[in-house]
Structures are given as structure tokens and as C-alpha cells.
Length: 177
Image 1 (tube, rainbow, N blue to C red):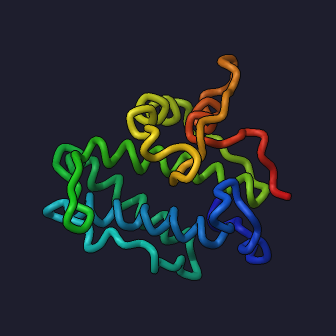
Image 2: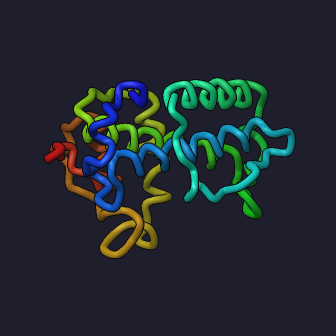
């Protein structure tokens, strides 16, 4: 999907109202690269958790593929069984894995919707995020004046992706202006 983002759309709005396409792409790739480095490092340490200055390289799709390959290799080697250190803070590896999976799915939809692309992550992965997200999406992080928008009510008969989006403060009907 990152490969297919038209350079003319980088300033377009996204469902993350504080970020345009370029800023959201940098956010997603910055965290993916950081988590992949942390899981892949011998001590489970990412060099830094400060992604504010991350800038997507000219071949962003290749960056995603490199990070994904590194992450998959680390996870196959048992990296999720140890803590992941982001800067001076750590979290259980399984928690970190749940967080990056949720983040990638929700922001993947954000980018796809903003750039007119399809988004259909595997249902099993979405169900994992549906199980993970409620523990993270607390009033401390979600609601007016918080990092994430309040939940959006989604009919129970909706797809798992739409339920995850609603839980994460997204309206699945959002379209780019």
C-alpha cells in the first residue's frame, strides 16, 4: 500500500485529523521500524522511541518490507517472549506485539481510506486486535482532548474490521474529501 501512495496526495487529510497522509505514513513507518529494531536486537532494545523526526525514505515500500522481514525473523526466534525496550521503558513482548498489530491495522485503514486504496487485513489478525484493543483504549487515551477519538458505535453485524475501527474511534464510512 505504501508503494501505491500517489505523491500528489501526501498533503491530503486522513481520518487522523491531526495528520495528513505524509505525516501519518511517517508515524506508521517510524513505529514499525522502531518495533522491528527492538524485537530484532539481541537485548530487545530499540535505539530510540522518539519517532517525531522519522522521515519515510524515497522507497517507503521497501522500508516496510525490510522491517516486516526483520520483525518476522525476530518473532520466529522467540523475541515476543522477552521484554521490548523502547528507549528507557520496557513492556512485555506480547503486549508490544499486540500494540504494533493494532496500530498497523487501524492506521493501515487510515492511509488506505485517505489515498483511495483497498484495505483488508486477515480476519484472524483483526480478531487478535479486537481482543487486545479494549485494554489499551481506556478513557486515559481515548475521548475528547485525548490521543484517540472516542469510540464510534458500530452495528454488531458489521465486519471485524469495522468493529475494530469503531472501537478505535474511526467511522468506517469516512471518505477523503
